[in-house]
Image 1 (cartoon, helix red, strand yellow):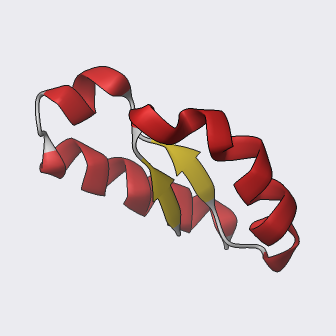
Image 2: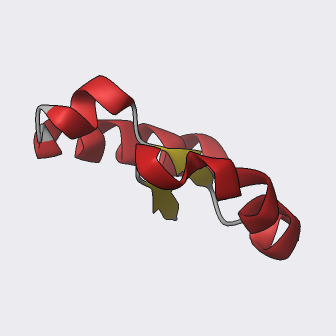
Amino acid sequence: MILLGPQVKHRYQEIVEKFGSTGIPIAVIDQTTYGMMDGEKVLKTAIKMLKAAK
């Protein structure tokens, strides 16, 4: 899994082009969640993404 912070979301397409074909889930962390430092929410979202990728 590749999670990008909101401050580098402009590089999302570059990361997808480089790693997207590998099947690795790639996402940008929601700005509000990131700003609130809500690690639990980030983890829950990541787990959902991983389950969906299987």
